[in-house]
Length: 202
Image (tube, rainbow, N blue to C red; front, side, top):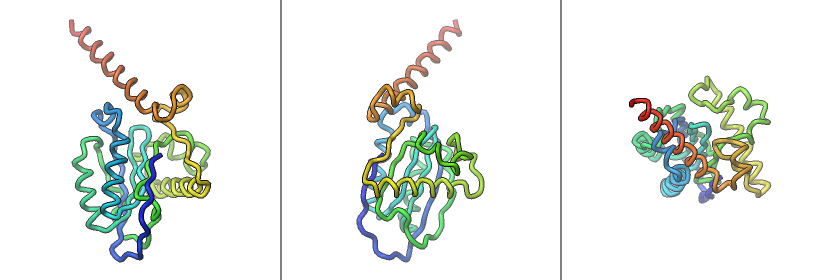
């Protein structure tokens, strides 16, 4: 998990929230540093533009909740549309906001895995497919995230991080190695598939 503390923010008049979901592209999947790069870019952008929020990745999907001025979020939305690391972007909400929910964070970045499985409200949202959510499902998910993050902030202990392949890889490799292992496995599968197609053409 990546988290950066944002500066204290005074009461704001022009405050909006934006929520979107998207899918990681094959280009994004093949680049070992995709998640780290996205987090680093978002942190720099959010601090400069007074944006706070949370970014989540799981099962090939992104979920992001953002808070800031209408202009800042509009500019960010236009940049996200052009980002080739994800596709099928859907805006779930872009609306006025009374107050920030993530005032303390320029960005919280999470890889979602089995730490949510014991949440009874989360069961109907699994497997993690935000493109299949209906109605207020995204709000339920966001509340679960907020509760989880608040709890661990109070405990002052970092939450456990899991990789996109789940228990097996995390038991064999340390957290900082897991994402690279996942990408290596995916790369090998692509090479095997290409080799099989070439052989079958002869």
